[in-house]
Amino acid sequence: MNPSRKPLIAGNWKMHRTVSESVALARAVADTSRIGPRTEVVVAPVFTALQAVAQALVGTRVTVAGQNVYFEEQGAFTGEISAPMLKDVGCAWSLVGHSERRQLFGETDASVQKKLFALRKHGLAPIACLGETLAEREGGVTYDVLRRQLDAMTASLDAQEATALLTGLVLAYEPVWAIGTGRTAKSSDAQSAHAFLRDRIRDRYGEVADTVRILYGGSVKPDNAAELLAQPDVDGVLVGGASLDAAGFARIIQAAG
Ligand code: 13P
Image (cartoon, rainbow, N blue to C red; front, side):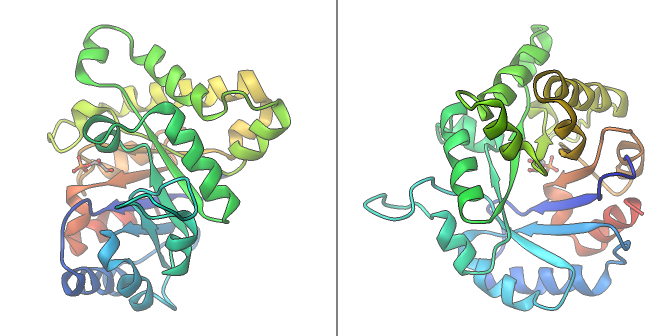
C-alpha cells in the first residue's frame, strides 16, 4: 500500500445468501471488524438483498456495492438493474467487468466502458475488474490483455475526459486462474501487474495514476492478505469466498491496518 491512497477492502458475495442471511452477515462484518481509521470497507450482496443490507449498515463504516449494473437508466431491458436503481436502494458502489460477467454473461470491454460512464453519471463509484485467464498467462500475453482491458475503459475519450474518469477510480486486478481456485497470485506477480497498470495510466495521462486504487482479487484469505497488501501498488483486496465468513473477513480488514 502507498500512504497516499486509502486502503479498500471489498467483499464480493457473488450468488450467495438469502436476504436474512445477508443482513446477518453484514451486521457481523460491521460489529466484529476493527476497521482502521483510513480503511474503507465495501460489501456486494445479491441484488435482492441490497436494500436490506444497506439499511442494516446505516451508521456503520461498511458501505454497499452492486455486483453489476446496466448502462441504460430504464426501459425494456428485462432482468437488468440501472445505476439510479442501485443508488435508490443505498449503494455507493458497483462492480463492473467481473470476469464471471465477462466469461459467463457476455460482458465486453465496450459494455464495461458504458457501465463506467453510467455509474459516474449517477455518482456511484465503480470497481472495475480486469485480469487474464490461465491460457492468456501461459501464452505470455498477460500484459497485452491487461493493456487492452484498461485502454478500453478510456477508449475514444480525450485526455481531459479520460483524466476525469480515472480520478479516484478503483480497479480490481483479478487473474481468472486465481479466482475460487485457492491459487493466489504470488505477491510479486500481483505487484508487477498492478505496477504495469499504474505505469500504463501514468504514461498516457500523467499524475492521475497515483489517485487510482488497484485492488487484488483471487483467493485472498486471512493468511495471505497482509503480504499482498504490503506491496506498494496493492491498495486493497477484492475478496470472494473468504468474505462470506465475517470473522475471516475481519482478519483481512485488520491486515489493511
Ligand atoms: P475468490 O476470493 O473466491 O477467489 O473470488 C475472487 C473474486 O472473484 C472476487 O471478485
